Image (tube, rainbow, N blue to C red; front, top):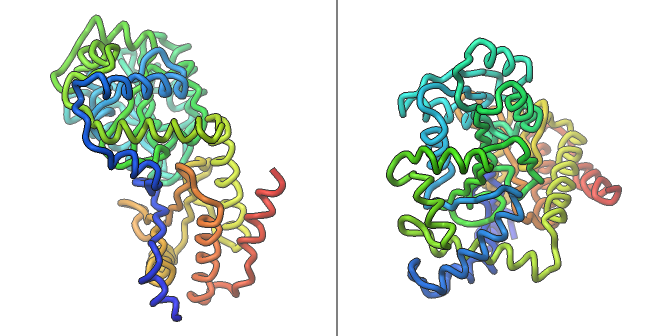
Length: 381
């Protein structure tokens, strides 16, 4: 049967960096009859999820908001600043922090880099010295516009050494569940359900430091995104407003899966690291260029003049969905997801299809080099 007909009888592979595919066991859990959010049955589920999130983030408190990650970003800027923020902009989502700040009336001091370039400690130190009244710094752990990893640990430590009272807000939406996040100097760590947790969009997480908790309780702000009100309620295993009951049940199913298979979070982190490393090595072996100077493990990002054609052929001939670039990177990159549990046979198929696509485009002759390098890397870890 011809390839273009085969795709009609096979399920498309979703390899975009969010939303990620939702596995069957999570879909089954969320398909159970709806629970009312003001019942003891749901409160016990909520309590279990809170316990697991505390263990994952290693922070004193974790809040769950019925929102996308962007809502949590706005909640944090609104809560931890009143007039001036420092934003690291190395991509679309760093740009979003600045946009949120301006929209709610904050002065935004912005450090702007190319989208393949991480923030430098020197630029941050200079901004802090020039603007003594900065209240918080906002940055991505992984900037998913280009798959870039920032040196967030070093940045957070620098900020706290300079001024302990400056809040560090870290967008970990595409890092949470992919890697261990050092929260030693982070005050608000943001996550989202549709990435490594493999759930539908609609639930945001905020891990909080003791300093952040004390501030929230002393200076409550806002109505729906009132973190003091949420903190008070969620300590009782309920929410201030309607909870995303089905998605929270899905979060519990994710953690239950880890327990059932005797998996530690470190196992998931190591698996993600191995897959990301092997994928990058495989892509480079077929003469593709990895875009970011410091790649994150949540995705592999390739820049190519053929990016648009590669994405189109992967979809049309192999039923594989990968993501392109946004704004200045439109038609210049393609992004392959590594968040969540990505089965080996699926990522191997994607890598093989990319090499076949290069042959279709007349770029190189297919010789299965990419898959060979991919599995050799995995064997050597």
